[in-house]
Image 1 (cartoon, protein in one colour):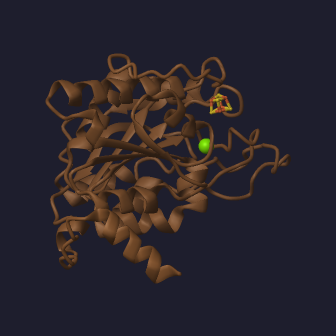
Image 2: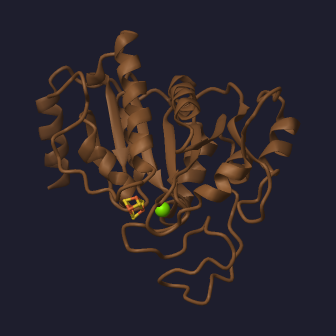
Length: 283
Ligand code: SF4
Ligand code: MG
């Protein structure tokens, strides 16, 4: 294991210019800082879904679980409940989280599961060569919508606010320092942390001109004021040109899902015996 770099020797197949490189770099820095701060990386688990983003599990040398499409949240939830001492981080794509896995995302937020989720929101299905997703802008022309999608995009921050997420932020792959800071905050927040990251897809939806023109870092904003948070969340609808705030929009403390669950029966000291008993029950 290359503990110092956290980069595996897997061949990297992301396209040149892909925003995923920036997310990988930021998350790697956050993990290395965690380690410097005394957290063993043996106690960190990364869960990914299916899509270009999911290769984070191939390229970052940490404990990881490659889930199926849309299932990052239930897998991450299960890992956290089974071992609350672990730091559990999920990476999902916009198609992964806002289409196939939408119900899981909503319930993870509603339950306030103590995990951090980073959405690589390139607003397109990149791995399958350019179909529209729930956050593609109206009129987006892709493989499945050659005449342009007739749907308005959803605002994932608004959805997460309504669902009860206790930490809501937005990042941008071309603002590395803020991205790293926001990711670190999300990991340290106790409860459900959601970060929607505008990630450039260099091949199928390169919106960097638009983003570069409109993004700004939130300043003088109080994320603990719910009304202020909602106003900022609604400032950009993911469709029409508008100022695009980056940083922490909303934050509050609430008991986590794990802390509110009824106590489970104590696990017998001999785990092998327990597994054998469970398998026996299944037969
Ligand atoms: Fe990145 Fe898009 Fe290429 Fe996928 S298709 S690797 S998201 S640039
Ligand atoms: Mg995508």
